[in-house]
Amino acid sequence: MSEATPFLRVSHLTGHYGETQALHDISLEVREGEIVCLLGRNGAGKTTTLRAIMGILQKRGGEITVKGQSTAGLPPEAIAQLGLAYCPEERGIFASLTTEENLMLPPVLHPGGLSVEEIYTLFPNLKTRRTSPGTKLSGGEQQMLAIGRILRTGAKLLLLDECTEGLAPVIIEKIGQTVSMLRSRGFTVLMVEQNFRFASQLADRFYVIEEGMVADQFAQSDIEPNRARIEALLGL
Ligand SMILES: Nc1ncnc2c1ncn2[C@@H]1O[C@H](COP(=O)(O)OP(=O)(O)OP(=O)(O)O)[C@@H](O)[C@H]1O
Image (cartoon, rainbow, N blue to C red):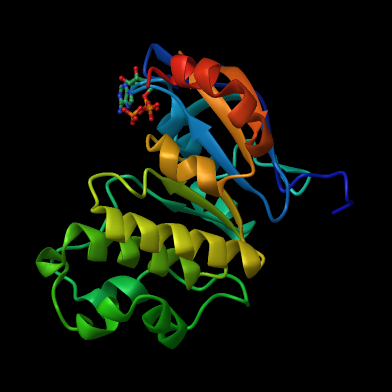
């Protein structure tokens, strides 16, 4: 991958649920080592964009490349093989499995993922709860498990969907520290966030999605001089 080739490039992405078009024209880039955030109101198309990148959205058009390689026609497993992992908004914790069984569920696809012990060091609560069934975990513990689980796989580009939703401020802070640590360990992150306060301190660059299109983009350094305009755009 040359310096100029981004880890992920999305060009004129379109996406449908049946006959309904949810994505009209999404173009964005994520460079290696960046934290990039998708912002926008409910229903704007942020989750659908992540689903399209991961190959879960059946009907998609435009072009998506990972390290220069097109993902057209690839199933989600093949896209995961390119080094991507997706942490969905609903977290996907299996109630009937223990914490540790949930953690071990996704296959390790690449070297360089975190070991179970490293994940437990990062999230000591998960170690304490290693034999508890998924149902017994708090919302914060479930979110940590959902993030920890994808760190094992060796994926280097993490797609995080609303990982702070419904969580207490102290847990949100912990997740922020985790995302910063991931950057320092060489991970790349594309996240969807409704919590602009949280995201504005963390991400390098932002795309605002509106009605399935990119309505605006800005860097972290652009926020202060343009705060009023950005907050109006996000309906804050
Ligand atoms: N499974 C589905 N079937 C049909 N339409 C859907 C489905 N999922 C989402 N949509 C529609 O697609 C559009 C984009 O939804 P999406 O979930 O991507 O928005 P979002 O920006 O992530 O919002 P939110 O913050 O509410 O998750 C919305 O109009 C939504 O109603």
